[in-house]
Each structure stands twice: as C-alpha cells, then as structure tokens.
Length: 205
Image 1: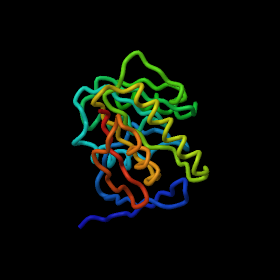
Image 2: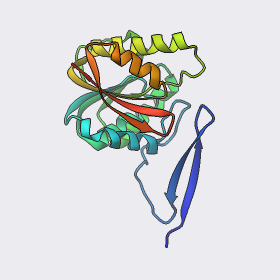
Image 3: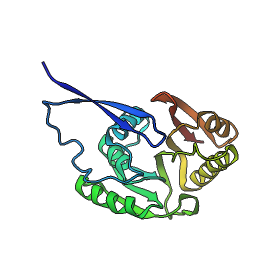
C-alpha cells in the first residue's frame, strides 16, 4: 500500500488545481525547475498539456511559445517529441532569467527572448506554436477580443503553412468566434482542460 498526498495549488484567479503525489516514489522528473516566477506554469500542468497535444506534435519541429514564462512548457514539449529548436518570448525579465537556467539544466535547445510577441519577427517561420494565454479575466471584453485578434494576426505571420497551434485558454467563446472568423486557420480539436479552460488545436491552411 502506498501513501498518496493530495496537493492543492492556488491559481492566479483564486481557484485551485489538485495534484496527487505518491510519497514513497522518488522522481527527478522536474529537477530542471529550480525556481519559479509569478508567470511560471506548473510542470505537472505543462506535462499534461503536452501529453494531450502529442498526436499533433511534429518530429524535429521549430517550436515557439509566445508567452513562455520560465520556459516550462517548452521544456515539456521538447521531452515529449524531438525538436529542431525552440524559441520562447516573454516581457517579464525574471521569467527569462529563470527560464534560461531551466533550459540549460534540462538540456533543451531553446532561445529565450525578452520581447513582446505582437512586435516579434523572425527570419524563419515556425512549425508549431504552443502556449498558454495570460489571464485576461480582469480586462473588458473588447480588450480580450483585440488580444486574440492580435495573437492570430502575429501567429499567421510567423508560422508555416500547415503549422499547428496549441493554445490553452479560458476565453472559450471568444476564441472559437475568432477562429471561425479567420479563413486561413481551422479548429482541429477542442479539448476540455480543468473545467473552465480548453486546449485548442488549430491548423494553418
């Protein structure tokens, strides 16, 4: 018989995520995570997300996370299937510093840049975009709509034809509305993720 510890992690919107931890099992699965910032994604959550995305991941892909925080999702993406290279963007300096440490420990070929995604350009275009949207629940509806529109516009300019975008967000209605209104992309799958969130798998035509 094994002892199981139930862990509750408070989210930024004051709800809680629940995780099960087997006390007797030692694991070095997330040892790359030496520190975290306010924008860090929990490694268990990142691992779960990449597992759900697995059928859509491309081998040796050029991968982008536009809101990378401390790069946890990029690291988990690289662990799930081989990548050619990854790029992570974030405007928060501390997140880039901590993320750089984490990718070195994890041995992932990634470059983290302190940049605003909506002002980003790259010489190459990406095979995959994988990210979690920042929480917009304190913003008004028009601001949230403009955020999603800007995301789609920028993503179209930096991704290849046939690229796959994997986006975790709680903006379910607005997200689907903007996908339907954009001819050059289509929704492959919507996967429920923790009740009020969904994971959207989108393909560029």
